[in-house]
Amino acid sequence: MKYYAIIVGGGSGKRMQNAIAKQFLLLKNKPVLMHTLSTFHSSPFKPEIILVLHPHLHQYWEELRLKYDFTIPHLLIRGGDQRFHSVRNGLMAIKGEGIVAIHDAVRPLVSQKLITNTFEHAEENGNAVCCIKPSDSVRRVKTTQQSKVINRDELVMIQTPQVFEISQLRKAYQQPYRAKFTDDATVVEKAGFAINLVEGERNNLKITYPEDLELANFLLK
Image 1 (cartoon, helix red, strand yellow):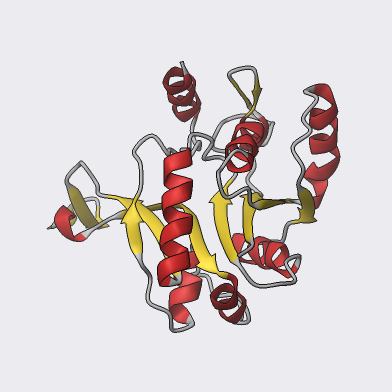
Image 2 (tube, one colour):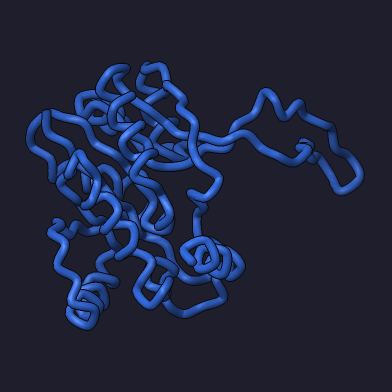
């Protein structure tokens, strides 16, 4: 069985209030993205890594690789307008069958345990999507004065990696893009496949806001 990891890094620095794309911000003295790639490279599954970045970020990434002497092998692919198109571009670079993990470039604290668990579960069940339960109360908001409580025991928060048999993902990404395709699980589910949830990790945070980067630095210490 062959294993792959598509690392999707198309985000900008807008919500980080930073001109630098968030996957390039420094975390423990090296770019966030390098932490993410290193963890997948060190996985027992040794997946072939496909990195998807927006075309205007390619040159900057090459400069960072030289600056930090980053030598982990990976294939650099052009990203698309939406995450959907970026994943599809990455998928097109895979010619054979196997198992592929899709992971956010800005989730650098993903553990070896979680990567292993999702690969193993997907190999056995066709796919594996990690999630965690919300710890706070949740309400559905209609207006600022109208809201309704939701039973949080019926909700989960989806993370990456999301891992699939390549045949499932290929069929799913033959569909036209829809705005409701917020992650790979929604695309695969729309194609008729049941989604298998596995337990994620609270430390597997997505770096979106400045305080997320501070927390990630603290956790790495």
